Length: 246
Image (tube, rainbow, N blue to C red; front, top):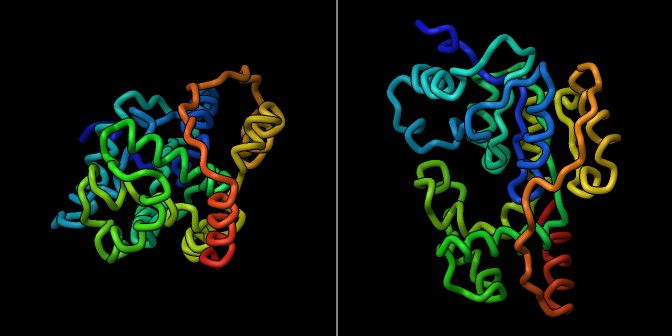
């Protein structure tokens, strides 16, 4: 058995997509006590193959072993797969295998997050609708979402076109808090990292009980969120999230 075969993460950036998780992971990776899994996102607990595996423990350990061949004894192993928080089953499986892990959840204004997600899907050729049509038709297109997502392939409508459902943060946080203590969860907003870079990272290092280090502020990637919605649509979406996210 290889050195890394029995290793599992004890730190997750478990949510949410398009809220600065890539930036945060790149900053945390610079700490000498944090080892980030290969390619940032291991996609273990949301892997449809996990649901079909006869030996789930073997599947989880072997997939993480492949992602951690570079591990060299750091205090934390970080998996920054932001879909983890989206489905209760992903959270449940994460808790089963990593019950003592810490979780960082990055949030963003849900309307902005939905637009950013839409832009990404459009650029990847996975969306043909206009943003308004995509948002209005989401409930119909993603009918059966909670039953279908765990077994859906990595390229599927349940992942690529789930613009609004991913913005139901209270529902997702409830699922996480059912499995992990509040003391194990750190919730941040993307704006905190953008506007108060050093203070926010110092707060994270305190949460992790790690020595503070200076991580230079850097724009990790250039935003391509150039789609603009009419004001009334944004207002309607904000009202939707206020009503739906309870």
